Image (cartoon, rainbow, N blue to C red; front, side):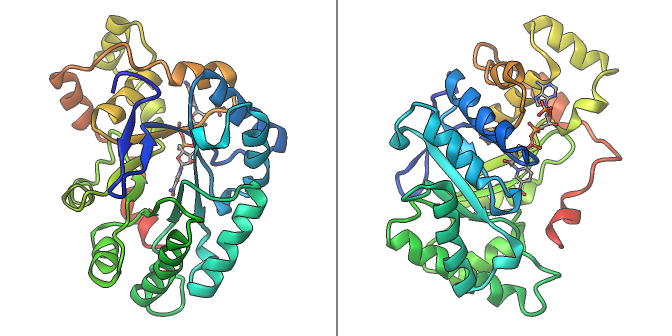
Length: 283
Ligand SMILES: NC(=O)c1ccc[n+]([C@@H]2O[C@H](COP(=O)([O-])OP(=O)(O)OC[C@H]3O[C@@H](n4cnc5c(N)ncnc54)[C@H](OP(=O)(O)O)[C@@H]3O)[C@@H](O)[C@H]2O)c1
């Protein structure tokens, strides 16, 4: 964890850069194109989008225009909840490739386990959906496959009933949302963990003198401390901004290291107003 170009190796040997540029809520076409280009310019090589974000086309344009060869980038997309099921997943993943104008994706994820709203048996639904990802992986269109927002029961369902283990689980992770059991199960199964919304606690930390002292000590912003916390936990960290300066400063987190005590301080924070992970997983 010494530079923006560091990678982890997935269970199938594919390398994944440890910091990713996220594109959730980037709906303005030009902001999406510019965001990707600005991120690549300062050294990000990992771009995260999703069918649900409705920006694959613009993210794809940013990738085309960024000036870096495709094979040097790591691009992820995710399956929209309404596209579960073998046939629908296959069809819409092909559509994602078309929108992004790419021949392959480096990683494709089932975005949510969709427990409540799939109108049937969520376990079978996820197994069928996963099979589509496995087949497209075999065909070389997806270089790695994984899941997102899968807690212990959802993950066990796939692990017990599928041919290929997920290589990644992308979950919400930041001080206040640690998802310890899920993290442990991922690690036991050699599943790389990606953390989303690492900056969520920012609005609660402005008055926190301990955190402010850390920021002063390292000459870093609270955003940089939170991103460093995530990276130091060994999570592939996804962060988003549409502002060039923030995109740059969010990547400037490799020249300091939080102490064990500082990591423990962040681990112990709780924020009443932040949604618990269950709110997200049971949709
Ligand atoms: N799998 C899932 O279900 C899931 C869910 C959520 C997110 N994700 C992925 O994870 C990525 C990261 O999550 P996130 O978008 O919530 O990212 P985040 O980096 O935790 O937070 C982004 C928010 O913080 C602001 N921000 C960024 N840098 C800042 C800075 N240095 N100082 C102050 N504010 C700053 C951004 O505003 P500005 O843009 O105005 O700077 C934006 O409002 C997403 O973009 C998406 O790709 C996945």
